[in-house]
Image (cartoon, rainbow, N blue to C red; front, side, top):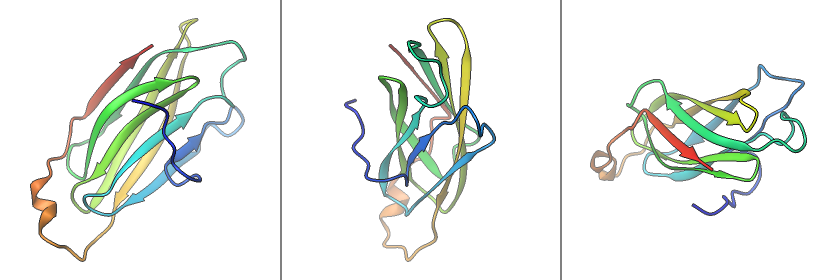
Length: 132
């Protein structure tokens, strides 16, 4: 997948070495599809690279994930809103020196109005992995 071109910070987390407790919040409507990005540039030492990015979702109910990838010092995945509710997602990257960093997301799928096409979507999978 090419680098995501999302405008602003709606679905892009800039991971910080100084505020590790930050959880990035994103909102979608059902059927909306966006790229979720964890940019680790501000959290990992210069010269380090991401070799593995694993995306984990707590339960497959509200969101569908697809197309996990690594782009430079960022990990990204496509998410699609399926059914109203929340999905808790963790991006876990392994660096070339074996260190592991995490970024947490909460994705809220907003309530209606509904147009009938939401029932055609399926949530899941709960885990995706990308390697460099």
